[in-house]
Image (cartoon, rainbow, N blue to C red):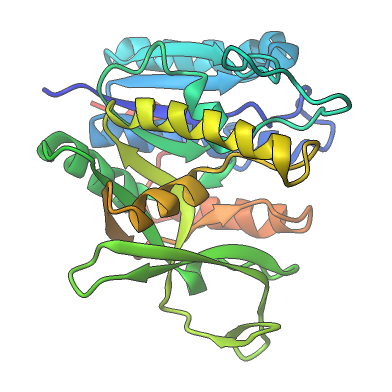
Length: 309
């Protein structure tokens, strides 16, 4: 079977479980967190390598809380596990960190942290988002079957399935060609879920069926050199304009830049699954209830990984 890897961007996770760190809040009765469900769904979909992007500061806690447990699960199912460290100071030759900057460089740089390990097709996800089974299956199938150069994919979720009852969210609304390829992403801020079930932003009403990006991408290893070149150009631009302390190198922005230059194609793989995340502290109750309902329906077992073959 063709090797496909999953890169989980976990460097933003806090350092201690049980102290209000939203990414590490348990959502299952067995203490499982959202990332457990992503690992489960990835193994079930046929991913055979998992690469965690972490920070040195959280390495010990990450291993204690998540890493060793997931290593044991992956070992039982023939899935390799690697850890790479995201560092603010790991920059291309000729560049240095601007004085006073503490903010990480963004999702594009997070993926580059794993460049030395990635040697085939790979998917990228956030550690603290639940994407659902359908998206993992569709992305895995695309990565296994597509051999076209510079042909990538993105999981698109219905806007109505990605909203919070407890506050506004920002979403990247996808613009597509007639045959389902990404042509652009519009970043829409302050999206509210209205009492009547509709969604709106300061710009007006939004279509609940619009597909949005939740940062789940599928690439081949040929994407890495382009991403590296893009990061160097980002740093060069930062010397002349922008905010050297806060500007980030983001995957959606870089992908859109490549699309404008017609260097790549990105197939939008739509998923009707409900996205879950803990944007606000108040979200945790509804998220736990949702996972309890999924277990009740048999989508997952009480002992999460017990159903994997």
